[in-house]
Every structure is written in C-alpha cells, then in structure tokens.
Length: 558
Image 1 (cartoon, rainbow, N blue to C red):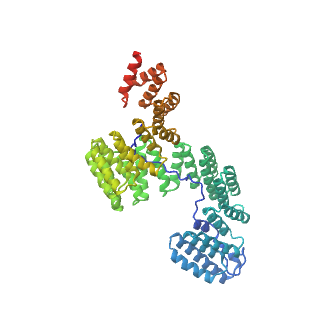
Image 2: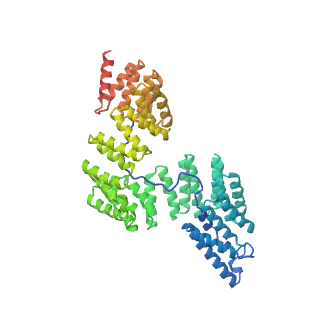
Image 3: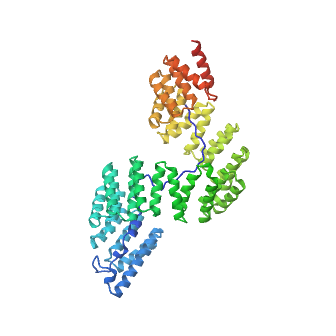
C-alpha cells in the first residue's frame, strides 16, 4: 500500500573506510611521499647522495629541495598561476632536473590537462629512467582517463624499479577490480602487504584498501581479521586503531568499537573525528548521557569555534531538554555562520518537543527563509498537516514548485498529500514528474501502482512488479504487489508475496488483513479466519480494522 516518508532525526556513525575502492591519493600526495633526496643537480648521476657533493653542490641541492617543496605547496593551495611561473623559472635554470618536470606534470593534472601531464612526466623518465614518481603518475593519470593498458604498463614498470611500491599495487588492484578480477585484486594487495611487512604506514594503507575490496565483496569478517592482525602488531598506532574501529563497526561490534575508540581518544588528545565516532556510539545508550555530554564538552574545548561541533552539541542538548543551554550554543553557531539560521532550527526542535506547534512552525519558516532545505520543508508540511491545514501545505508546496520545478522531494510530498486527500489525479501528476527524472524510484513506483490499483488501471501490475524487483525487502512494496496480484486472480503468488511482507513487518496488521483476504479468495477459509482472529485480538488500531472485522464476520457466518 502507499508508503509515506517519516521525519527521523538521528546522528549516524561516520566510518572512515570509504566504500569506493578507487585509488584516491591526490597526485601531489604521491609526489610528496617520495624521497625529495632524489632531486639531482644538472649533470649528476642518479643515486648520488647529498653527502657526495661538495659544499657548493650541497647548497644548490638544498635550494632545489626548498624550491620543489614551496612549489608543491603552491599547487596544493591552488595558487596555480604562481606555481606555473615558479616551475617555468625552475626548468629554465635546471633543464636536466626530472623532479621539476614532475611538478610541471602535477600542475597540468591539477588543471585537468592529462595529455600535457603525461608528456611532462615522460620527460622526467627520459632524464631518469628509474624515476618512480613519474611512472606512478602516468599510471594514475592513465587509469583516471580509462587507458587501462597504459596504466597497467607503467604500474608494472614502477614495480620493476621498486617491488614494494604500495601505490603501484593499489593501481594494479584497482585495474583488476574494474575488470571484475576480484581474486587478482586481492592477491595484488596481499602481496603489497607482505612486501611492506614491518612498515606500519604502508601496511595500514594496504589493509585499508583490502578493507574496501572486502566491503565490495560483502566479506566484513575478513576486514575484521585483517584489522585485528594489524592492531596486534602495532598496538599503540592510532591509524591501526582507526582501521580496527571501522572494521568493528562494519561487523556491528559496537561494544568493542567503543572500547577501541576510548583507547584512541586517550592517545590522540586533539583528534576530533574519533571523538565524534565515539559520540555516535554513546548517544545510542540512554544510560550514558553524562558521559556523552562530557565528551561533547571535550570536543568543544578542542575546537571551540567549530560550527559542526557546536551544532551537534546544540542538537544533543535539545534532546536532553537542556533548552537554555541549547539556545545559547545555537546563538554561538549563528554568530559564526549567520547564513545558517541555526538558532531558528534549534528553536523549532525545542518547540516541537514541547508540542508548541504554532511556534515550531514559525521557527522553521524563519529557518527555511534563510536556508531552504527539503528536510525543513518536510517538517513544516508535517506540522501543517497535523494541524489540519492541508490546504495551506498544498498551496505552499505549489508555490515552491513554481520557483523550482526540479525539486523532487517537493513533488513527492505534494503527491503524498493529494493521495491522502484521495485526489488521485493530482497525486498521479506529481508521481509522474518524479519518474520522468528518476524512473527507478521504487517508492514512487509503488505509490503510483497503488493509485492505479484504486482506479482499476491495468498499469498497476507492471509498476508494482517493477517496484518489487527494485526493493524486494520492503514490506509496504511487497504488500502493494501482493494485493494487486490477488485482485487479478493470482492468489497463489499473492499469498507467497504477502506472507513475506508480513514476516518483514509482523506488526503491520493491514498487511496481515490483506493476507487473510487473499486466503479467503483462494478458498482457504480456515487460514483466513485464523489470521483475522489473531490481528483482531491484539489491542491495536490499524487503518483497515473495520474491513477486517467485517470479513471475519462474513467468513464466520458461512
């Protein structure tokens, strides 16, 4: 049956492990991670060291390193014109220095000029055939531009130069993954881990990439085993702890994750991110309110003017009903970010918790005027609807859609309101507007299928079936599909689908009523009566309770 959105406010735990497996290091990080000792004077041979040069050469090398790092910093800070001028001067004065061509390649990459970047890195290779940075940079650029063969070629050349280069293995593993060669990708990463055994930084980086692969393969236990192994080898390494806590959270080991996070925050006195992760765990435990508030205060002391920190603190104080303190923190947020309208948002939440609907609506309207978001729009419409002002809500949404007809959330909320008012034509119009942009939106397909079911439109089955294929574990969507199948005389399949829906949502008695109705239609009167008797004995109201009572009465008298 129709499924409507629920307003739900919660803080989620943000995992540092990203779900994408692609090698994510910026090219300037790649350049910066390599030894700047490789910078050579014109005419010197690769492999000569700083101490092999005389005093004049030592000073020249030192100056080159300084210029290199200063230019790298300019690129990182997006001061690209200044960096370009600096690189031109460096290359004019040092035309045989490969690392300055690497800088030129980095600048071209930053300016989204991959062909020019490869050309510069190739010059570095011509000057120094064993230049690891240049080989890796060309491999990365080639992968980013979908030239997998060239990416593979240069990554393999990098391994010939240095067979423990983790970045080369990461690139090759990513190529394997894009070709769906997941075992090969895993093997490459495990080789990188083995080659770098004892190097904590590289082991953890490799384990993180393996973790991404295991997430992709839906093998969370492998991530945990790997993280535990790394953590045991480096028990006081904060990066190893971050890896472990993410693995624990992915495996739903919240108690263990909390323990690891407490150890991590004790070690890293200024780490906000790990404290936020711990905060996300603690707010789920009502008996730890004091502990949670203490942690928030600690985060605030580390970053007293951090808007995100202050915002979370205000939200949590509101949850604890510490309203004066919440408003004070919200006012500070407003001073730091005047365009956020955060004070009005917190006031709206406070008024909502106090059931002061009119004041809440005014507060949210003020926030929406400063910073219009679909979340606040949804809250405002819910308040209007709860107060019986559906007409006002509909007028407001129509005005918003005149300003921005691409707002799919506004279309959905308006369609839902029309549907609730039995304005099926109006609801259909706005559901169709969404499907024109997002044809695989299962929720919209489901709701439109229900409208067509109510209109006896044969399109109902096609839409319901598509929605069910897209979201087979949604009880509401399975319910719609099952009801439509029953209406069309396919009671056997309908029973299977509705039984599944009732298992997914055992307290949704409307679904069980639909199941009973299908039992009755298939001639299984006893099963229909048993199901109806069960749901009507429960002291719960549901939208079709009267219809269930009437059906039970009818079946019992037959």
